[in-house]
Image (cartoon, rainbow, N blue to C red):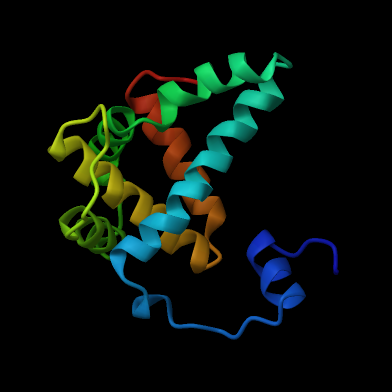
Amino acid sequence: MEEGLSLLTQIKESFSLREVDVRAYSPLTLAYIGDAVYDIIIRTVVVERSNKPAHELHKQTSTFVKAQTQAELIEALQELLTEEELAVYKRGRNAKSYTTAKNASVGDYRKATGLEALVGWLYLQDETARAIELVRQGLTRIGREL
């Protein structure tokens, strides 16, 4: 593997994955991968900032990955999104999901799904830096610094 390649490029090259038009993915597919990307962003910051037992790391992380926090975050970010990013978010938010979060309102769950779709879309476009920047700015705007 060549140094300096993005995680996405490394995965695609290592597993011989073909290029896919990101617009072909459903919003819930984007949210599926975006959930993992958002989680890795939060977990990375939590781990890098404090070396604690795993259960303490989980407790700290869970406050940032819950639907309510994600909903607040995307609400605070909307004015910073490009037209295309806003359209992806809305597609994710409006997607018909057959599951709901245990401890979240339907509204918060849908907004969180929209955020995850946006993060997934950015990741699959190899725009991870933009996803990280949006998460950072969103957390700052809602007063939830990591």
